[in-house]
Length: 512
Ligand SMILES: Cc1cc2nc3c(=O)[nH]c(=O)nc-3n(C[C@H](O)[C@H](O)[C@H](O)COP(=O)(O)OP(=O)(O)OC[C@H]3O[C@@H](n4cnc5c(N)ncnc54)[C@H](O)[C@@H]3O)c2cc1C
Ligand code: SF4
Image 1 (cartoon, rainbow, N blue to C red):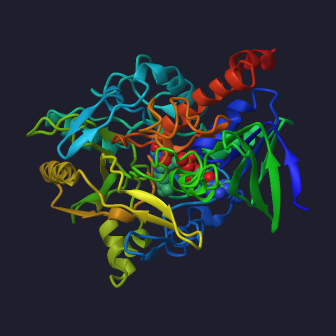
Image 2 (image 1 turned 90 degrees about the horizontal axis):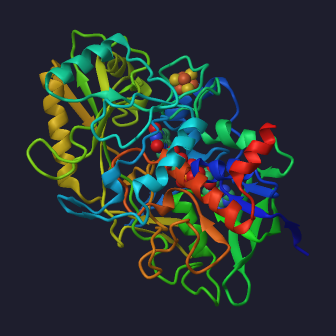
Image 3 (image 1 turned 180 degrees about the vertical axis):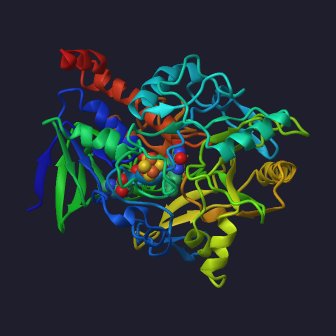
């Protein structure tokens, strides 16, 4: 007979969404189980080894997904405690006030969210404290914040400071990138896409999960994959999750379930949990589970000068948001520009493998790297489906391309004007899954959304989805702080509505 376990809340996935929410619920007396399919990332030499990370893909999932044409591809995704946050660049942005409203783009409408900026602001404040975000208020013209950052900005290295002055002289408003870094960070050049060997990066494993499991009420299962959610016969409550752990299938029962598997896997889990009561997938009466997948349009650009060696180690400190709401020649939003961590020769070689490493080394040592990012728009045909054999299929045709091309063109012009002799660019195009979002969207109307504004499914009362899935639009800033802020908001809601306690009161009691 299948083994049974019982908890008060089951959180499936320990990344930016699940990890943050579990941390907040650890302040209540609820017995919380975190189910995580991966393990802890060990602290080891390979954490910072570009060969291990970029050539041997040591930490990336070995899973292969299918694209719209049925071709296999390795998703750039990580299954481990902390999820993708473990490898993020720790750029922790608030969405802009306008991102919460209907916003006209060159190729269509970015729809309004069911909540406004002011609703989320107190949770952004809390998320920035939790993830120790450094930044400077008042320099970015699009920044909606009403108070200071909890930590001062990370200073620009001298080469970047010179570039910032050049950009200012063009009439732009460069600002410090908001970064989540802990006090003992040494600002090395292996941050974005690497796990931090010093545990100095603000991410969900270090800031949330390891803190939460200090509480006797919180249990973490690693190497444990939720394969299915089972409902009661009428289908209005989840009764149990089936979890495969070390070869054994366990039935985990609870009054509350939170799915936080990341936008693609959360949709897949709901679709795989179809039943007589939910024939098209769990909580899918709208038919929208898996649909409106978005991932941002991202192009890496590098300004190159053969006679200038770039000696900056930690380069990722500059943002340019002047074109976020309108471009230089039009009224439409184009997106945002941010400096990027240094490209490593091995990383560059993955793009064109026949060019020798010494040539790449000579090239990247003379380049300054940037990420140019634009919003893609929700399209119901961009979607996650699950094949008969359980494999994930991603149907994604990028849209809003004209805005992105305009931003890339403008950045090329800026870099040339700043003195770079050549500008090279690269994009992973439709296979870039790092900023996946929008597959289980929140909204007020059950016909046009899957979740309510607190991320509770409209169809199943004790089921929440709290990760990047809830985004009704992708905005053009990095998504994670918004995922964390909403996770804190949902945790408050669960505590007050479902567990009948106040997290704020509990935190006060714990301090005493
Ligand atoms: C290299 C890289 C750099 C990035 N840089 C930034 C950045 O600078 N700023 C930013 O805002 N964002 C960044 N991102 C994106 C950011 O990491 C994600 O938006 C964020 O982690 C998403 O949070 P999530 O909770 O939706 O999913 P994840 O963090 O991916 O967490 C999902 C978790 O669920 C687990 N899981 C999945 N399926 C199951 C299952 N069936 N059972 C049990 N567990 C399961 C996974 O193992 C994982 O731990 C970056 C991403 C990458 C890959
Ligand atoms: S030391 Fe700092 S810069 Fe280097 S990986 Fe860790 S958090 Fe990132």
